Length: 485
Image 1 (cartoon, rainbow, N blue to C red):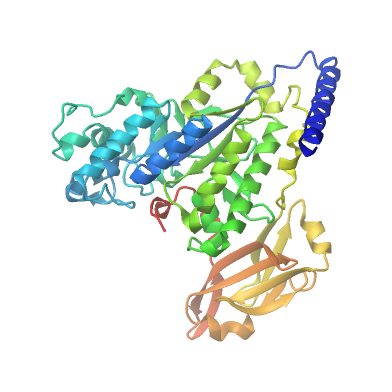
Image 2: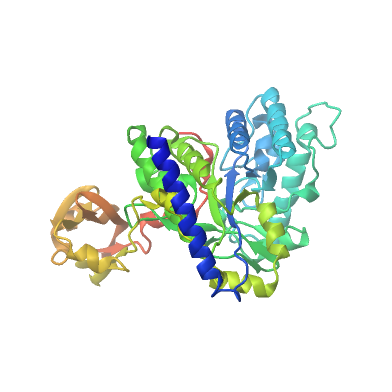
């Protein structure tokens, strides 16, 4: 009986949607055709053999394709690491390690990359040593790209592995690697000059709003990760697994809260997806690593999300190279209309509405400012939902020094903190944090380093660091994201 009710409900919902589409169609004949909803799943890693197998097995079960941004250093055995010369740190230096000690594992890694390519996945570049390149020169970037090609395609030669495929162990050549994601998402004009000279066609090293439609920057398609807010909070993070791990548990293992973290991530991704799906259809970018933090919460959340959205109407879970071809096919006029959302929107189907009934995020921000140098600081809460949060009788603001609570109150009366009574606790470099809670749940938090500066002899004036610790999560692909917990 239950299955019959569901069938009748689905038929009714379908009929309503068709009627609505026909009605809208009569008044929107001048709009451009609705674009498909692209969803891009990528991995920044290539080391774990177990994860190569697991990611490829999952992709087959769902008939979707991934983009793998591989790191050149994983093509060097630890004993041969001196062959890599990091542009600013020197020989044998890598923030993410090397390829291990086993020749057999190295050979297997090559086989897995070939399997991925043969199955229709994309192989792209994540450079090598994973250090910050935002201040690199053209010479530095040229060296890094040259070494990437040498490390990847010279993997057998560099590690003295004798094979019939000595000259090129892969089923593709370097000209087929056309996409790039910079370590730490650190990029500059010199990087784009090098990418352009080497005929790369797209880059994923920047960050944008969730509804951003790609555009060409310096002749290269910009496919950025999205800055999103963690569901149920106003905390900012990026659409990448490690960044959730960082904002949720401080980058430290906490498997006991597996279910909570998984739910928050899936809810965040649903909010991101449906805003675009029913809106301007900007591509959805989901970044991952070969690690299973917090009991695999983020890997499991990504899989659940993919299972649900990749089979919805007009959704294309594709590689970045496929998105690249699609963007190249669009006229300037069509792309301009897509950016404006000037097309017939997809009617919200009742059958899919349950996916939207998840916890939503707060559009709100928090910062600490100094009112009287060395004596008084103030928290400032602003944004679309600020007034709502302040009006709630069960919302609180909590001040802490080095994790110890020193003041708590409502959002109207406890925004300022007198630092003078706590000078004795600030003799060393300390952490001052302020957080906002609603019904006992932390909605926002800002933590600053307090550095006592000596003035006029023995007097020490506390000065706040310019950036909050929580801002680090917006840096993107951090080196520690390449290591298992």
